[in-house]
Length: 450
Ligand SMILES: Cc1ncc(COP(=O)(O)O)c(C=O)c1O
Image 1 (cartoon, rainbow, N blue to C red):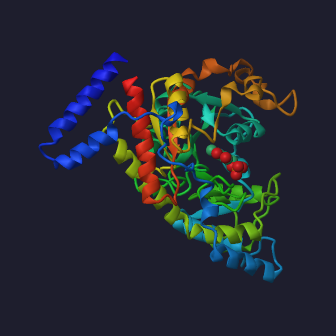
Image 2: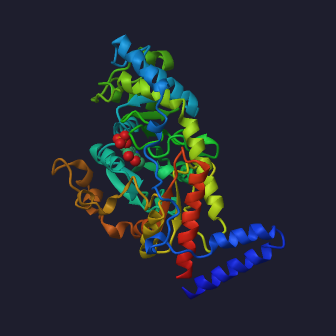
């Protein structure tokens, strides 16, 4: 702690030097702002009297646009996917928005993953590399395809660490899952380079990053195939729903057939021409027209939501940038990052937990990384439990040999335990943003005094 105190003195010293450049009132205000105040958690006055948080983003923007879209479907009495319907409209608009050739609406992000696995012909004997911190659906889609999931560590962006991917590549590896988690784009240049060198496919999971960009391109359009989710907690939502995105007509045809009992319809023929594949054993993951209608409305708000989140997160980052020894979550591309939260690396789990408790006591919503699980330590993963004892995933020599549990992802566990973040809302007012900044500064500086 001693050197943290020194650091704070140095910081205040710098502020003093800055007074020559700034008006003295501004400097005084700045110093007062940073004067250690009694934290709310210790009985001091909180930054806010009422708690500031943000619910699901998309529903905050529901209005007469979604209402009208839904009424159209109700009045048409035609809620099943059809050629002139809302789902097809949404698919076309979504593909155009992203700059992709094809988008396919499905029932959820999970079923989008199953369709993507089928499109990539992932099956028994194949290995798929995914980040150890990820949603269950990615792991389940691999296992339910009969393939073997292989975990790589995350880095300080909470996304898959490209440096750890190569270590796990074997002659059986077929796909890398690049999951853009909690609004943060992965380091796609590095991942695509590895994939090219090893002739692997890249599946981008954009469920937690709809509207996110990497170097100016929408996530989901950089790899071979992308998936999205429109479940309640995602950038835009219809409660449930998902999409598969690709530029590759064969992958699109396979995904399309898989989502609709092996067949392709007129909208498919119109956008691609006649299929080149025969049908194969498939599913029904068709999106219904009510979902398509809500998503047609929500899509028009996607950029508003993303830009509000980004602007607010940017202000918070700027408002705390001068804090001593500040270490923020890394991002594959901070400009394209959605800014759903601003995470600080607090050094260890104990300090992180104290930081979060103290920030929450100031009336600001804050927590550790969320929306995913440390999969290798999850009971059903660690014990390789499947629907049938002879399931192919874990019956190959590699499947039998692979070990999950905490030993396969120590760095992931450490990174996640150190980071705590404040929630950013797309509807935050300027005062809300300033309160978030004030709470972080107050707690962070007090912790550096301690
Ligand atoms: C990274 C990721 N992938 C896939 C999914 C699955 O999406 P859904 O809930 O729509 O099935 C989720 C859902 O939270 C997710 O976070």
